[in-house]
Image (tube, rainbow, N blue to C red; front, side, top):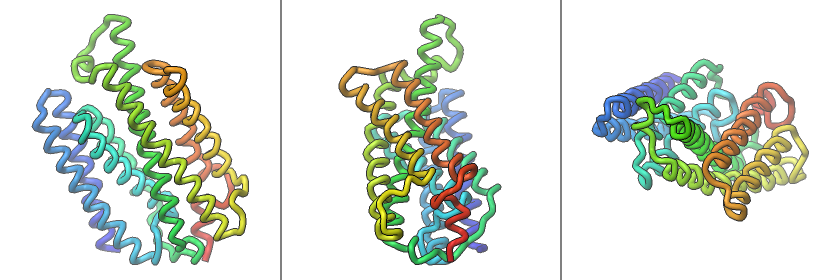
Length: 279
């Protein structure tokens, strides 16, 4: 437990330092701070990967069966996808969103009970980590799409009202934010789809049926349809800009409920309590 705690704390500290660097770089218009923040984030995901390896060895399987572990893994996926997105767009302002979000998610993880349980043989199927990885990477992509959508609405409102504050000079153009939104959607939707498909195959091998209409499955399907509608609208109807940004924000609210609300408020086979209770 000592090594896991140390690695977890070092990761959280890395994300905090990166957040400060990105925010300072954005506010003070110092791109060098953002570049350093990028390297600090990279160090953070390497530290966190080491933490996952230790937890995997201790638990005997994929360590994503509690709120603590799930939040931690989501933070890792978020930072990983941001760094990949940054390779294309070089947007430090997105780092000023992604790094603080990852830090606060890690804080939420730290405040959750940190209990390592021996996983049920059902959860040790090779399909389980595949399902989890696809699903969480999809969630992370949609979180970045949400961030780009919020920034788009802020920028758009200032342009329409012609009331420009200091943040106006810091935000990317509307066209760039719309492209980031679409890129994240284009990445997140296939990942989410693969997560649902791999989850169905895993359920078939574990419980003998592909779909149980469990609350988590039902809400995941509702969320999938929302993002499918958004992607369809962008590809066929030409949804762009403000409409796409608003739809991204609404869909992400449904995703948050699917990820956290269902686990904490509703019952079913996908709750953290159900996983922890299995022996």
